[in-house]
Amino acid sequence: MSTATTPRQVTEVPFWFGTATIFRREFLAFFTTPVAAIFMVIFLVMSGVMTFNVSRLVDPQGQAALRGFFNWHPWLYLFLVPALSMRLWADEHRLGTLELLTTLPLSMMDLVLGKFLAAWAFASVVLAMTFPVWLTVSYLGDPDHGVIAAGYVGSVLLAGGFLAVGSAVSASSHNQVVAFVVSVAACFFLLLTGWGPVQSFFKGWLPPALSDLLAAISFLSHFVDSFVRGVIDARDLVFFATVIAAGLWITGLLLQGKRRR
Amino acid sequence: MAASPLIQARSLVKQFGSFRAVDDVDLQVFPGEVVGFLGPNGAGKTTTMRMVTGYLMPTSGTASLAGMDIATHPREAKRHLGYLPEGAPAYPDMRVEEFLRFVARARGLRGAEVRAGVNRASDLLELGKVRRQTVETLSKGFKRRVGFAQALLHDPSILILDEPTDGLDPNQKHEVRGLIRRMGEEGGKAIVLSTHILEEVEAVCNRAVVIHRGKTVFDGTPEALDQRAPAKVTRNRLDHVFRELTQDQAPQAGNKDDEVAA
Image 1 (tube, rainbow over the protein chains, first blue to last red):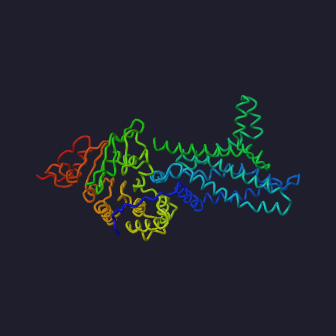
Image 2 (tube, rainbow over the protein chains, first blue to last red):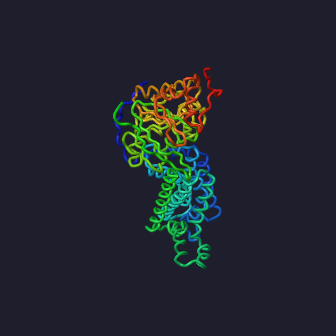
Image 3 (cartoon, one colour):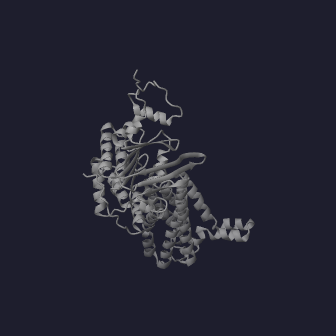
């Protein structure tokens, strides 16, 4: 076979092609890692157990709107989403493949967005696999399908917010375990600032502006108080979009920082 | 020799804290040149390569590939580059074929181009037997060859190879060296390879660059490098020159490795 360099016409590729290439590799990689399988099994089993045994599936008003089901999602995601996000960048650092990726003709945005979207798509696929819960309540009662659909939209956004936080944490570490623990802590903080008892604790001694701000950045209030009740509010959509954009922007900055060292 | 260099690095400096890893290195590589990049461990070879390929940002200085500045036009510059990073990193759970297809797509190849590129690179590096294996099951030599194949998928005009023959057995070394030489001579590529095996430079390269403590201490043909050894040194002449260039004191004549004519 000839080794001669034929000046290959560099064909212009569409702008999304790089992101799509990274997305494809990362998404398929989830199906070969045990962590993803564990995520899937634990999420499906726990969401079922919590919904049917701990919370009452059909709430007292008889509106089987799956509130009990969705109310558990923030707490399940708290431990499961960091398990998905921890390997995103920590593994690239450890394997040395970050050097390969950053010397390919791809932009940092292709890398960051491709990986994030792959993890988000995987989490969404797992969430979609809970559809038997929806079928069950439809069979047992007469649920408000609009409210349930809003709950699913909110749950997808919630997972995206956690993943964006986890992506930034993973970009700062060579160690998956460190990335996992720090992500859980960061997500826990972002949940708790909106939890009633914690809010009243902060109100006791923080200036009102600051305690309101803490309440406003909580993932919990933007999910439980709105989507789960069937309300899709533009403010909540903007909130999660902002969290995701900020998380990915910080991820990019951290990775650029590694190249500057 | 063509007028414009394919690799052009000017006054590259890399400072890690108080340590200056690369100190004002210039490098020009023209089509058809195969440059052996030599130096002791820690001399700054890998750091220089990482700056030229755009992985590390230089503290100061510039690098361009095929006339495109790596800092201001990174994607255009990197399209002309095939790079084998130190340690030949690859995803352990991917099959060799999947990995090569992924890199081919990331380099902008599509459809039939991907297949053609993967087949061509696999043939050149003789990966036929392991194409269906996952990277983690490969021997060190095969892993290195997968890393090399990955750099050839898009038939780039510039190749930067960090220790391409490390971990290969003597037969494989011979074949890979032949491949590199042909790609320079017949293919007209600009090739830089780092190594600490001095015979490799004589066997493959038509130019040698030696760096020591981040500075270029020699840049010329392998013959010129050899000429620097005193006539009385009859064996391991390159070793002698290498030590002379990269040790802080000159080696003593009569060192047991050099058979000194009486």
